[in-house]
Image (cartoon, rainbow, N blue to C red):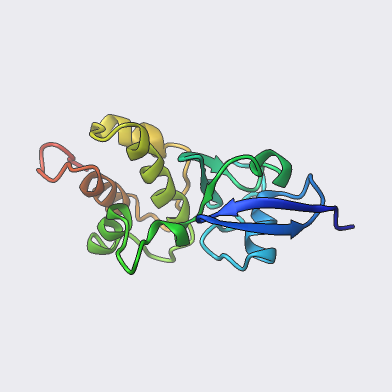
Length: 162
């Protein structure tokens, strides 16, 4: 049963959503707002495929409710690009060809963006720590780490040895 209307701001745009307060944010984003960046992976907040930014911080959209998310601005993968210009993290992932099937990329990109939001110059160790709970089943971790390092300004081989 749909609940009363809840207003949530996603990618800078307020949306009135008629859904129960306990509806997972992921369902609202995909089903009501037709945003395909966040993916359904595990449904338990453990794989990272559904990662979004809540007030600039990484959050698992499958395990946070509409009601919990509504007070905060939500940014999805689609909201990173501005005026036709990719976010530097998105650009780095493209340049490093850091995808195979691409299912995990939403979570990887959003997690790196969240890290950069709080630390403009993270070390390789901090990048690895931030990404430790994002799963990639295809095995593109080497390319993902290279892309994350590039996005974080670690371009020298010795700075971001994989």
